[in-house]
Amino acid sequence: MAKWKRENHTGCIHKLKGKRRKPWVARGPMYKKDGYFTRDYIGTFKTYEEASEALKTAKGVALNLTHNTSMDEIFSILYAKKEKQGLTESSLDAVKTHYNHIKELGNNNFVDLSTYDFQKIMDKLIDGGSSFSKVSKIKSTVKQLYDVAIENKLLHVNYAQFLDVSRAEEGKVYPFPEEDIEILFRNDRDRIAKASLILAYTGFRIGEFLSLDKFKNIDLKKCCIIGGSKTDAGKDRIVPIHNKIKSYVEYFYYEFPETSLFFSRDGARVSSDYYRKYYHNPLIKRLGLSPYTPHSFRHTFATKMRMAELSDKVMESLIGHTDASFTDKRYIDLPASYLLTEINKLA
Image 1 (cartoon, rainbow, N blue to C red):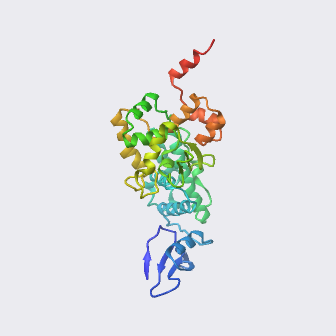
Image 2 (cartoon, one colour):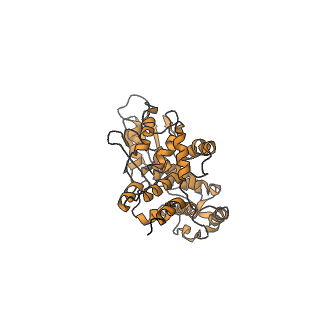
Image 3 (cartoon, rainbow, N blue to C red):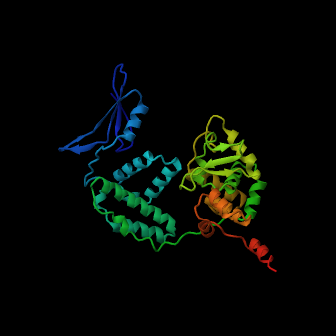
């Protein structure tokens, strides 16, 4: 009977020997009962995929965590839950990234960790210049770990509530100046320059961009992209393809016919971290652009919309926010040249 390796705490699937109509056996995660470790029997299935789906939807499988359960084990349970929720690959990557900041505590028994253990890491990050947004996301990860422990009756209090990240300051993200956008257009034979201009004229987050499926999300006939995943307001939003980037969208659409991915590395999926490290950062150095992250192109898009005097309703729809004032406060940084032009309109 062959065993198929799965994520911790997500159960196991075995294939029985011989000719059988339903050879695949699914069993739930291992837990302790009456002093012995056991698994709940889920059922037999025709295919591995059917068995895997049954595990995802199985109800009432006990985990029975103990005082010796490590934080890494708690995280594996949390991550499995996130997968079942249908998060995109980029969102799952973000879950791992946030956890990596506290992973040094991973081998410790979770119940033995104190607020002070996590606070030391938070303070170090804040002293190192991490933004309020970043440390808040890490704090949220700690909260979710405690939620798992509480759900499984390992603890009764969510100690993440006592973590203090108030000293952190919100990092300022600047849009790329118009000079940089012009440089990108002049160098649009560069593949990543094309991708950057698509980001600047659609406002997609880098993770959303890399998750685009050209058959599901790109409609060349209607000249629009349907994408986005972070919030309800931003999910599956319709973004028309600006005339200036239409040829770039077509370039990536036809670049690798064998894959459904809109942007890829020779047909293979690209993570957000890989894109920043091996595509975006080298482009910045190569063209001498402002040393900003790909997220700044989203701010560029928002600033361009405000300068073009698009209505609040249109801005909210295209950027994926529910309140234009939030966009104005966090995303828009009007250049001095524009402000000078505007003030000279005064009588």
